[in-house]
Image (tube, rainbow, N blue to C red; front, top):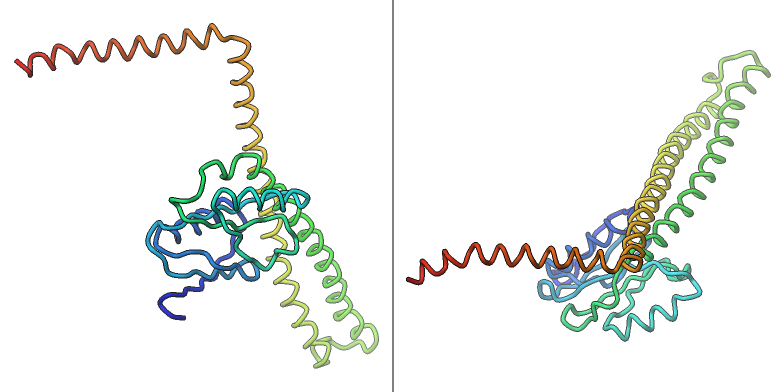
Length: 242
């Protein structure tokens, strides 16, 4: 790989951590060019902090509209291998040209984590089914030779080799199942946290609408506190000036 191009392999199960990684690469002077297979990131050399990247989750029916709006805000769409799914957008633009209007808000993050939870839940179910089939196959490899000949399965090279192969595959799928289940549960926890934050914001907004006088009193108290602080520093400033 030349000095002007960089390829890194990273696997993320959290959209916020993935966004932090790409943002750090932008800060170091690397612009995201493409994402392959969900874990290979290709970058090109740029100036430090020249570009910024937003990874945005959107409903398939609104992807075209969101992409058009992002382009008006100065972003370009970065190709990735899951373009066909049309639910995650990698958007990159020059830091001094993009509009701060387009950013990852709590709703977008919740969509991303719902998508993560749904996908990893499906993958977990598939892995569990595969594990069940493999367990039955392993059981058959041990039982069939013993029942038919009364000998130890290890005495049959073919059955022994298949048993070892299926044992390794079972272990691999067991590890994948644990990873997928943990990722699904982690996404669900993130969704609950974001919901709580969103509910708290809505409560504060309703409280402001219902009690405008109380909000004004809070503002007046803060202003009064600032005035008192300034008065405390005025005598000291006058003494120094003298």
